[in-house]
Length: 120
Image (tube, rainbow, N blue to C red; front, side, top):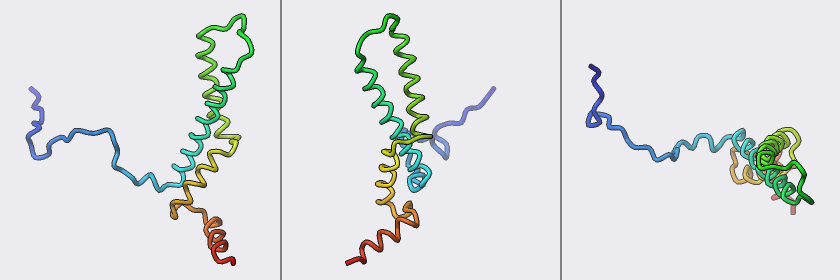
């Protein structure tokens, strides 16, 4: 017979809320870069979806299934474009957010900001 640990023992099991309290990953430049890439992927995906909705006519063989696969293909294309040939909106967002966190600023950006403040 198997004994199960009681919940009234020395270490009661606390319910989880689903919200992580670990903030160590927030200060990482790699995570910020990945977030910028994902933002750009979503932006490109929305742009492609908008272009698809502006179709000039219905095709002879169009179907709901074909639309579903086209949406999946567009998602993959958007992710690939954001990773390999970005349009720059993700980098702009990453640069903007990194300015507010001194630990994530690049060494080249910090002296440029100091020079701008000392120039009359």
